Length: 114
Length: 116
Image 1: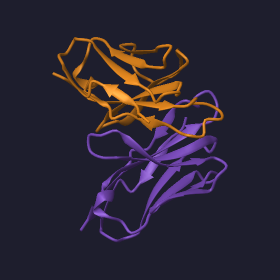
Image 2 (image 1 turned 180 degrees about the vertical axis):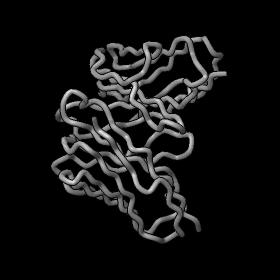
Image 3 (image 1 turned 30 degrees about the vertical axis):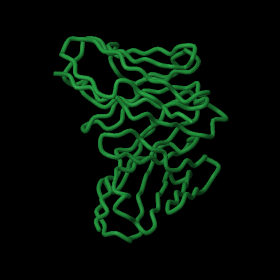
Image 4 (image 1 turned 90 degrees about the vertical axis):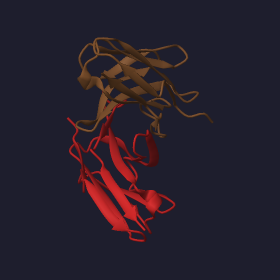
């Protein structure tokens, strides 16, 4: 069974700080890992997708890394802005019969204040 | 290109009724998954369909069912609604949902179901 844990559960920082969100998973036999953002009451917006063979992906101020052997991923947000305030979720896809299913963490609720 | 479309956006139902939610995936996507999101349980997987066949199923009672049509559109049905079924129901689509699918999942905006 795949379990996904995200730390911290909540984070409040002033604008301009660089920050790191953590995601860990118990089964290293993953196909890929995806980071999402969710605004209150809304759906999920995909931020970054890392294939199991990759070590990191970058998009603008976001950088996600993957260490499959240790079961960890980090999402780095540079120069945070109030508009970054949202809940950030990581999700993994396992190899094998449950490949079509995403396993989610509970998320990190981020607040960036001016 | 159009994203994943879920209808309706909001729904209020009475306990004991049944409800059907609809999801239209991105054009060309053949895998559709459904998730239930509640404050207490987070995101929980309901089921996944690919080419009209259910490939994966989560741990939900038989009151929760789904299907996928030949055009990849999917519906989810919940019968005999309970207060605990109140949640945000999210649909996601992917090109293939399997090996070789390097694009990941795209989610819709969800259907907010309230059971009173």
